[in-house]
Image (cartoon, rainbow, N blue to C red; front, side, top):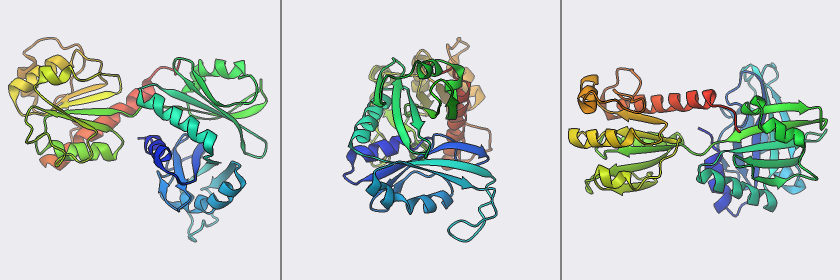
Length: 346
């Protein structure tokens, strides 16, 4: 998942100066793709990764100078070259990676916090940056689904960019040249953080919650048993819903960014949950158990959405940890497929 959510949380709470580095263009193969960002803090720490470590080592050296000058800079890393990078070995990644580093000044902080506000409220946001001939960022603007603009753009926002946002070309992150404004622009869309709703707080739900949080999901755990539905067992969960299915479903505002897994191990409760959840606006609904159990749960009744049962990819998983890996793999696969197949931004 994108690191932007962790980066925005850090920017909002830290008092340290920082530099935001973003991959703007990739030619050939690379560890990460366009739109991936990492935040370098002045104390030497960082949030996120752009590579397996090779790019970060080079970029971190420039952080003090960028903070002092207060001007964005662009870098090009030729991973096809036989020239060694900083640790004296050929990288051999096979691609050319363009990275832009921007000092996070007060105005940029305000706009990034606004970006976080929209993402937290499940609103997609497109970013457009314009570059000068020296590779610095001259203007940038954020554009929401409901056509709200914010950022630092000198003069009137060009109609050509409004047209770009409504075109199929807006779906792909990366650099492009707009002849109408005679400038290179970088385009990227930020998506709200996906949310995993785990119904059932048994021991096998614990590794799933932990792995999902580590890979970028926000996690909500729901169960009617207070002894199980407890932060001692789910330290990284965003929140807990304590109650029976009819009670907890009413507490949730569902969105297309929601994934749900039913794993209470109680047939009656699972049946209630599947009936209630299948009527909601969900991206994914999975049920732990066999195909035979699925048929018994559904009782031959039509379900308004696809139900993944048995939940997870078929990797021959055994035990809670392996089952959690198989479930999470299917969640990530669904996430990627939906992102790739989704219609254009506006």
